[in-house]
Image (cartoon, rainbow, N blue to C red; front, side, top):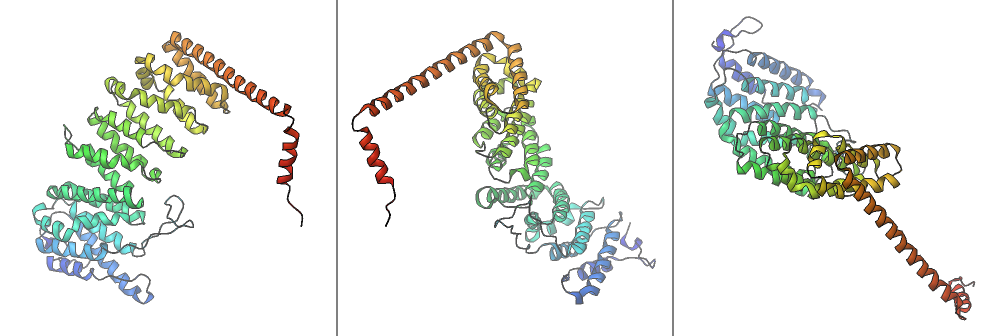
Length: 435
């Protein structure tokens, strides 16, 4: 179908020249804060709506001239300096607490994004024609920079748009991945602030899902140099679900990656941050669910040592989450396979917590976990319990001897004739002088 077969409301054929003129007219930017531009804003909106309708048709030829005008119109409207970040009452922006800014020009921006998305997803798209304009002046790179917009509506449509560009223009993929890496590096090691990390990870999840086997060394480096260090920032909760999905995609494709993933999680384990620790426990269980027995053997001791620490946590939600590992049948099968090595590591934490933890729910979970261990190897559990009792008795005896020794020295000091004089002198020195 030719563009002339598309008709406007007056049933007049729409020519390529007319489309290009509309695109050129829409390059003009309106100020939504200026009431005197209300008429211009409405006129431009109507033209954008007309373009949206035009690009929804299939069967017309997309020419270089049209792509030139389309990318210029897109760049004029979309590529801009983003508003300064919102600053919360504590001097920092907290995406979970502070209200993000909305883009005033969104009524126009939304239509611009829609027009471009329809063009890029059209069955009439000729990649060879569009390619020079997508590569021109870092067009696709600039799209990535917009993910820092505080407006979630823009980030959401950007996610769809950028993903289509990545999928269709194969030759610029390495460049796009490199720029994404730079965004992540800056976020991890410099700013710890970026609004679009979750959306970028969501795109990466789809990209990783399409990786062919064996996984390239470049992609493995990305996993361990970028994805795993993304566990370090304080704001992990904002993008943890998307990050975990990316990592599980890697592990499912290559089981041997699971060992280093677990070891890195243990290396980045949060200190004095209970909500973050719960996220780490969640992610570790997801990795264990797809881990093979021979991989588990290589990381089981450091992993179970950390589990024991989490079980002993005074924060009941951390303790509760760690104890739920022992309700996971697959995880317990892995532990049972190496019961002789692992029960002595984990059981002392269970035993101690059963005596000291204040939460009744935790005590119930501890009882269930100990029962599972008993079923796995009752003789070993009994032996561990006896050793713990002996160690407790020895510790109590040691503490008693220390106390007896202190009592002895205290008694001897009081028997000294100078003791009362020393006490009186000390009290006089401490009493404030009256002037």
